[in-house]
Image (cartoon, rainbow, N blue to C red; front, side, top):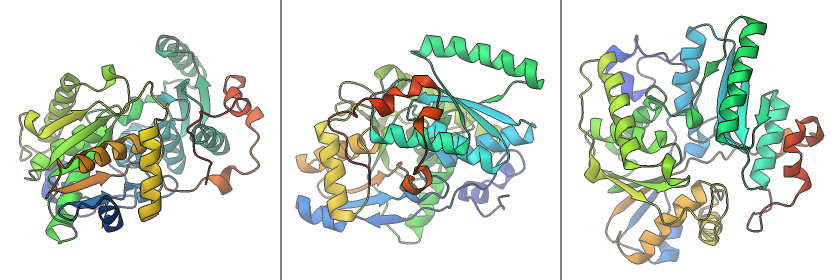
Length: 375
């Protein structure tokens, strides 16, 4: 599971980081880039080139964007001798599930502190997969109660095991976790240099806790690319703001500069970072007609599967820009942060009633009206 100096492009470019930043190989990287020519044809945008970055293929046991952050976060936990990690998310959190699955491969247990979200088949699948993987799950009615319950659990663990679990922020978003997406931008630069795609004018990605979009922004600028990042907000506005983006950018940039002084201390490139707020809808995890139409269109034209909470809303934003003509003549890249690994065989026969009682409602009450049937 160790990473060599040449396994990750960021280390190849800045070798001084290799012995300083904790890291472990968890993902199947690099992920491919593919052109969506059938989509271009259907939308009748012959002068626009649309590509997808297939982070949905980032590796078993769970694809998507989270493993890139976990390569650094779980490495730090292991290096410091932790046997348990604790993280946070919504009831169907992809991050919480990915953390638990990858922690398990490193011999660590995982605890997920979750809050309610609108019901969906994806929420059900992730909860059952958490059950199958032995992830300890708790649900509290809101963020304040979650904080209080977390404090109680931490001290209970301290009394029973002699130490606290290692805390991982929601979404894995921290100065260290974002290094995974700085590396991802250097990975993209190598693919551009090999001729796998032209340099994109715009990169579209979901903005939840912002680690993915800001990490990419930092990496793109450090790699010398002119690409602008279009961050599509999929969480409440308080979690995705320009002020927070700048703070995260500076924190990760400072960390990397300290790890290798050759890494430049870059100013926040506000002109290259665009927020798109119009596709969030009414609530986190509540699907919108535009998102589900985007999910349907991409599946029909390319066979790629998205979902309604993150990637569907992000792709809907990209479709809106394409149809408006604002991207005419441009090269655009959609960063697919969804997991394409089918969980159905692994969760078949799992009994939801063995989950804590607070989760039973997700299985006993109907999913939201716009949900798609599980594949």
